[in-house]
Image 1: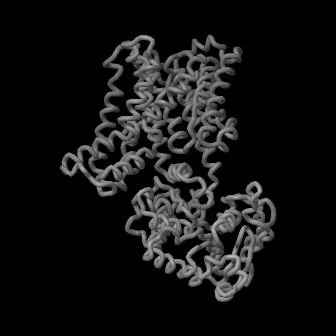
Image 2 (image 1 turned 180 degrees about the vertical axis):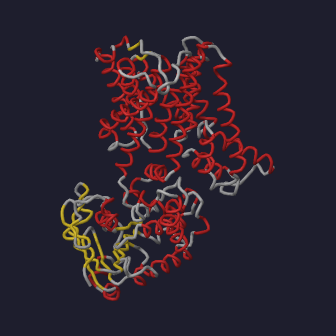
Image 3 (image 1 turned 45 degrees about the horizontal axis):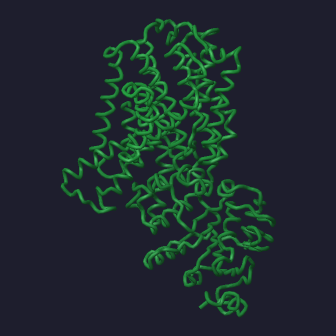
Length: 364
Length: 248
């Protein structure tokens, strides 16, 4: 996604074989993505630009899902909760108090984190499928609350008519889809960089270790539940930031933006993206949204069928998700160039090792 | 010698089975104490009770003069109880060195020692690398733990347990699944441990037990049959009766 992302990805996998080709591939890919991302509003029409902006926002929620599902090992269907909380918090603030983007983003993050802090005891003591069920309930209850609490959320009619956002005091307001898209792109880029940097610190290592073997963590004196709680609140802040961006990007918010279909789509996108990869989460979410919104135009009314097909195809072809792609391409190049394609398991360059590369890479 | 660990009448039941049935145990400072007994005697359960992975149904545990009966495993680990599992438990997506770093994280000062890269290297990474060297794994420090052999994982988990600077090390069948060369290296490693570390060892290989242990406790069906020096245990008729096939 970003140069920093590329760095994080490669150096984490650097302990395995030939980091050089992969670094080159990932850097080139990330560079191309950034250039394409900036060029988008000049290449497509206004309407498509606004869809791209919304896709980016969902990608950021996808990052928070990946943080919990892949890195911390808490599979979640409930990140629409802090996402919605951040969006409504920001919308109310935007209508009554401040139209400054930074203030709105920080409010969104704070409300999202607060939402997560309130629900954290429900989540961090459970594991696996139970977490999935609990977070599903949290997401659904949030949507119900959003459609019932008319005085604040406008019920199922939603909230509209927020004044246009100015990113910073004294800056011009964002009055075009292009401006709103670029604003979204910059904010998503910054948040993703922050997430990647944090994951590269020992904090990321502690989370991955907690996911790998919790009992061993406790036997080494680590308060695992506390770590998971912090990760959950941080993921809530990321989703809340995305909520704030959603309000800016589509200038409208309603409970339909946070339904179960959105949660399911996000989890699907993150799994397709490679579960623990931040870049993969955005790519996977974008892919899923694209299939639902564009490809389904070819087969009207069959979007779920296409999504199901997409999932089956990725599960077969790229068991490690989109994020595993660079490792797979690199190993393909390697086996071609060395003409030793029938490598033995465990030997250098064998499937075993490239799997290790992918596994450590997805943790970036 | 003062008692480091005192367990009083520990009980743990699984349904109608008393896995650990009123067991008393004393481990003194610097002692090498071995637990032996046939399969199902309650050895691993007893280690779990002491390490905190399982809570006792009744009984008390004191460690270094402090009642730890109600403390969780993480608190006990921070007080100085290190653990090695029967199936080596390592963090498979982390490199060998990072495994030791994370295992010694709390004792190295946690995030306070990681604010700057220099501090992190000197206070956290360097001691970790030294431990890897001590167990003979310095050559594979950057290999992901998922790709280590069983024997290497065992060595790694020993380095991880030592990184926690334990006063008491709980070893659950450290020789299981190791080749004879690896067992030899393990015995060397354990005999080189400083006497500031006490060891409670569960092991089926009696040659290892008799070579290392100062005291041997024999368990059978969740009960303590005998405690004594290796020489006494070897010849005790009561032990032979309870544990006939294992004592040679």
